[in-house]
Image (cartoon, rainbow, N blue to C red):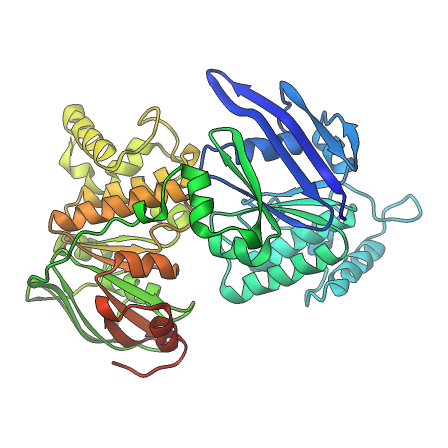
Length: 497
């Protein structure tokens, strides 16, 4: 039987007025992948920061290999074999792979620095894991997946026995996820333990051995992954049934709002045709690279198209810019909210109103009452949780950041809302709120196009589903035809509808 490499017992951590951790327990076996699952605010990040000695708990014990340890600094944690790979990677882009792997340590066997020796040792580590990279390459030239691999190898280079991975696949393609999982399995075989944090339940079932669920700063329980269901995990996280999550009212087909005919863009989109009805959620499914995001960018004027027609309410449009799209009544919530949807270092209020500044700013005069009315309207409508409109947007949870992106576009009163991966990187509770928001918007007469890579989501929330592949619409399914098998068969192969 495997022994525990890590035991965290009765961990308490309090901030002014808030118990972030209230008697948390976590036991990790040697050579296992152990997930920590919970909504934003459940205490996952705080617990990891205690393990990494970023926070010092008021109460509790930590045992490594059965011996109690006192972690007073990040170096203490590293000395005990603990390495944390944060969601925001901690690499220096203007240095080489070798420089980053050995940053803060001395790779020399002889007590003095040798670049040649450092490059050689870094290359040996890369080769041992079958990674086709040159240790002299600059970090800035690597993909996100390759940078994560460098972080992992950096941890291995200092003999880490416990590696924490925080949302490691949030920005990776399917092929890159496969590569990461192969490395994780290799680490398991070598006896390294992985603490894995992710909102993606499907990948937890694929890669983890056990799952510890947290809620409101407490440990709800630890389960063996193969013995638990999605419904059980969700009940543990939020004390609700899965059936309560997807909120979609009965859709009655009305008039066509948006009509796209024979839309093409060289090498990306080929002869795209579809209609969107008033109050409809039209889902777009497909594999990575199918052309779904490219289509959304064309519809919003971010990318020019070569041929075809776009009509709104039977009026043909010429969309060459986002300004023209917004004027027509089309808005886009992009796939990457942090880089394309928000100015994270600015305030919540600024981000919520940036699209409608002209509504309350005339010359040098700012109508504060009108500004506050806009802010209050969408804060209440979307239940945005923020202590102040002056709060930096970067400090909000992923779910609340997504609501801020949606609110700034709702303020423009669009007829058509394009949602590209609307629930990516947000927790289960925030997803439920997002589905309720989408449903309410359609009941008010808005039409939604939703791009989603989550099969259960696209099936539960869509009224019809367009399956894309190789830049083409392969098939449009009616609700009674929905099934994972049908959708995947056309996403992988299939012919055009």
